[in-house]
Length: 462
Image (cartoon, rainbow, N blue to C red):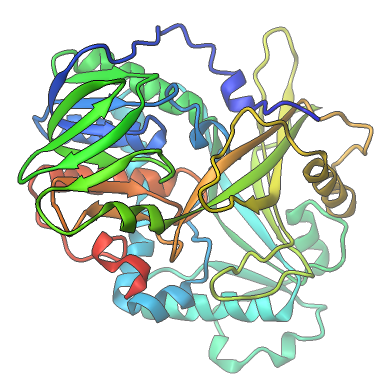
């Protein structure tokens, strides 16, 4: 059994002291959660408004899901675009996808504005498809994307595949063909089962280092308007008419607005003194999934990449297009003092549901069976894998909070506008959190925004 040891946390080397909350405080905005969602919500709020911001984190900045992920920067959803159209209609689904894809620009703005130095690698990444049903689903997504005013994704089908001639004519112009060899080369595999691939913008970064650097920038740049308290556990949120009252570390926090930028699994209660109950609805909104990952180091300077692999045993469902046999891999330069050119290879895919009401324990060791699953995948699919004798330098797990409809919850709580959310998974990687951060800042700035599929009023996709 290996300890939960994340490469992102290992590279932090932070020198900033931990400052828990030790007094009652007033603020215009209190943000609960110090991961990438909370830190970026603070960034855009401080940049775009004159509000004072208090950020509280139960552990340390970026030590939750932000420090226990695969470090991906991608803009796709963990459900098909077709199913989003079914739930929300073409207009809202298209606008939602565009919003997440536009987060690349928001990230660029933050990098330039805060003069961030955390390496962010961008490139064309790939996803391998091995079932005809999967391919048709992606082609239908492409057709609806174009109909909704979005650009089509690049889908490449192996010209040697026997099913090319049976692809329905309505998908003409929404894919191209190439040799099977070229597709396998892009996917970095010798496994013959992949019949097509999807190519799109992707990136990799140390998300924990990125969040920590932004937090440091905010502390330095906005000393009069920004406070950060770590190891500060919020136990209660009480909502009044126009004001929120929180209890954290036994102290009282009063704020005009409360933002929950979390994974949705905090042991807190929400009491609405100005309307119907929110607490039960909030705690029913999110389902826990614990994702398992492993990483090893290879010598050399291969280019950064991010590749997803859809397995042949994956069941194609509109609510879970990844299926149970889905793996993802990232490669990025690994900076270690005294070491030569090295890459860190990170692989994820195995996961398990968190039983209802069971607490996630971050200190739990990594179950060997998940490491074995990752090794089996590497042996079968990844041609650069040196072999089973390669030791995993890192093995880690993280708690992912999925809303019931797997669409990120971003916006005002309809039962009390004091409370805002930027939480849950609506895609893979950091971009959805950044998109949500900017939207919350706009709302806090008093801007009137068009309806969105991320709105809490549309929980469940009604």
